[in-house]
Each structure stands twice: as C-alpha cells, then as structure tokens.
Image (cartoon, rainbow, N blue to C red; front, side, top):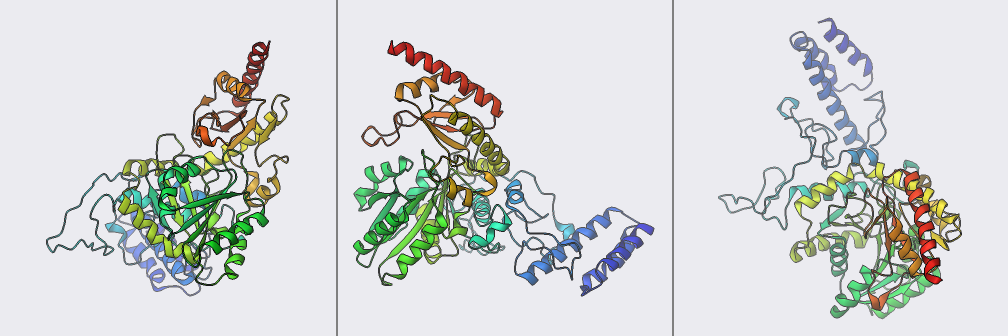
Length: 525
C-alpha cells in the first residue's frame, strides 16, 4: 500500500501543469489495486505512458514526437532510424503493429492486448476466405485481403517499414537540407528483384519515355533497355552526372523532343557501379526544378530517380534531397545475408510526380505479377534489423582497405569516395554523413591478367558477384558484362566489404597482390 501511495503521489507531483483527467485518476487506480497485485503498477504506468504519448502526438501532429513539457516533464527526441530498423517488423510500442504510427490508442484496453512475438510472422497464404456478403472488406481498415499477388501482410510490413526509414535522416542536423516529415507515408513497393523494381518504375511512366543514364552505371540497366524496353519505344542516352551543365543540356533536349507529352527520366546512380561516382542529388533536383519552370505546363514529366543500392538508408535518404523516386536492390545491403532476392521502389510524398505515379507503380507491380515473395520479404525484414550496424562497420573497413590499396605501387588507381584523390570526394564529404562513404570500392591493376590473378589468389575474400553481404567479395567486372557492351576497365576489380576483421582482409589482399605479381612476372618471362 505504501508503494502505491508513493507512486501515486509521484505521479501527481510530476504533472503539475495542465494535468489530464486520466493522470489525476491514476493515483486512485494505483491505490485500489497495487496492494493486491504489484504487477498492476506496471500495467497502470504502461497505460498512463501510452495515453500521454498519444495526447502529445495529437497535439504536435506527429506520432513520433515526444516532449510536450507541459504534459511530460521528461522530454524525448523523435525515434531515430537506427531504432526503427532495430525493430523492423516488430511493434515499437506494445500491442501495435510496427508500421502503425498511432503508437498508443487511448481507447484500447491494455489488459486486452496479447503478448507480442519478437520475430515478425511469415504469412504464406495465397488466397483468403470470402465473406457471405461477397464483399472483401475488413472490419479493421475497410480493405479486405483477396489474393497473394495483391495482398500479403509480410510484404506490407516490409514496404511500410522501408518507406518510413526513407524519410528519416541519419543525423537530425541533416533534416534541414530539404524536408523531413515523420507523419508522411510514401508509397513503397516491393518487387521480386532489383531489376524487377527498375522495370516496374520505368513502365509506370507515361509514354513516350526517354531515360538519361549516368556514364557509369550498373550494366543491368542498359542491358534491360537494349534487349527489352527499347522494343517498346523507350529511348535512352548517357551523360556525366557530375557535370551539371551537361545534365541540364540533356534534360532540355529530351524535354523538348517529347513535344508536350511523355516522360523524361533522369536516372541517378549514387554511388555508381563500379567507379563509385557520387552525384550531388540536391543540386540535380534543384536543376530539374529550374528546367521545369522554363517549360510549358504541357511538356510532360521530368522525374529524378536515385538508385541508392550502394548507399542505402539510413545513410542516404534521396527523397529528403528532392528526388522523386528511390530504388534499391534489397538483395544487397537491405537483406544483407546473400539469401534474399528482392527490389524496392519508394515514391516521394513531397513531389507532384512522386504522388501521381505512386499508385501507378503499385498497379504495375500487381498486374504484372512481379511482387516480392513472402519469404524474401521476411528475410529482408530480418536484414533490416542489423542494417545500420553492418553499414557502419563495412564503411569503416572499406576506408581502411582503400587507404591500404592506394599505398600499393602495383595498384594503378583506387575508386572510393572516401579518398581525397577521388574526383567526387568533396561532394561525398558534404552529403555522406559522419565520414561513412559506403562499403564498396574498386581498384585498377595493369590489365585483365593481373586482375584475374589477384582474384584467384585470395583466401579470406570470396570471388563472387553481388554485394552488401556479411562476406567480402571481389569480382572482375569486365568479364561479367555483356561482351558487346563492356564498360569497366579491363584491370578493374570491385570489392564489396563484409564483416570480417579489417586486418584479415588487408592481409589477404597483401598476399594476393604479391602472388599475382609473381605469376604475371613469370608468365611474361
């Protein structure tokens, strides 16, 4: 009884100003129950905290805001993206789904809530029962689930979690760079692969479509355009994304050729694959707005798409810098374990074209049947829970490896934005947070023979394509690109840094470079 009285008194002292009625009555609730069951103190405190959080969220218009000192004298900052990621697929507050911003419904009885599983469920159903009325409705949200191609709860949790993180800056002092609104929920669509996501996004744009690609880009994109989409009327050209003058010229030329209809898609890959070029997305977005302002309103759409696969959230949030869409091959960093195949598209809730095409992207995904599978969605949700920790370690190790390689005489060039020698180092230092420049690098050797010899001599590092997993990978890029469109330098090796000890990676490279040098020299003689 003394515990209940003391707790009730503390509550009354803690809320001396504008005290809601449910705070005033909490002391009585404590006093009447605590002597019978001390656990009721915890239950009452949980109820009170939930109601306080809900009232503050309502007052501030943001469900992630905690800190109205008049109601709660212990202010809390907004939830960070690392916390959201750590709870991916889980509720951040008890009894609510992880993607439901209404974290504390005051009309919900705490005692009616069940224990929450700490691993998100895997929903495998492909079809759902139809009510006797014939209407696929749902008493909870008014939208019924019908068929697995259009409805899957596991996939929806992933989409809404990623959409939330795409709008959360890594550092709170970066939020002023453009916009950040935690109450916005963008349209995020999960597809069966990164290439499926790219195809879905391009097919969602009104025809005719002209795509402006970066000079350095993942070879799968031009291959898609060459082999499939150009047969459906899509045109494309390339430009150096670091030269804003050339970008502007290409935009104006493409927009004028559309003759009042169609779409111009500026495809930005940052960092690019495999040369790790970094685009100044805020400046490019401002440039697009300038070009749009000079064009008649009937001149069609110009959209900015950022493929941020190599630098995912929370380190990179292109939608906060003015991009209309961001795409990821979630097979890479978001999944993070080399066992999931999945792609993601998120449409900006801030730009006109992002809002207009968001539902169109969803329609293309559902009608063409390129949605992500439930199990792959679950695997990526699992990967998200360690994404921020993995990324920080991989970035730091990559910088260590890049510095080592830049000191080796037989290495001709190292491509890594964290090095002062990289042409985009200044841009990268401005837009990449806290000295984290990504976990992928590439370096050039004398020729393809030398590069293949180095790749053949590694032991800790694995030879393989893809990136973003826990294992460090090395790959000779030119030999995997289409023979008729090889763009990578012949002596280039791309490395995706994993989670191994940095000293082990450096030692493995050191020995591999020595062995390769011996092999090439003996071959020359």
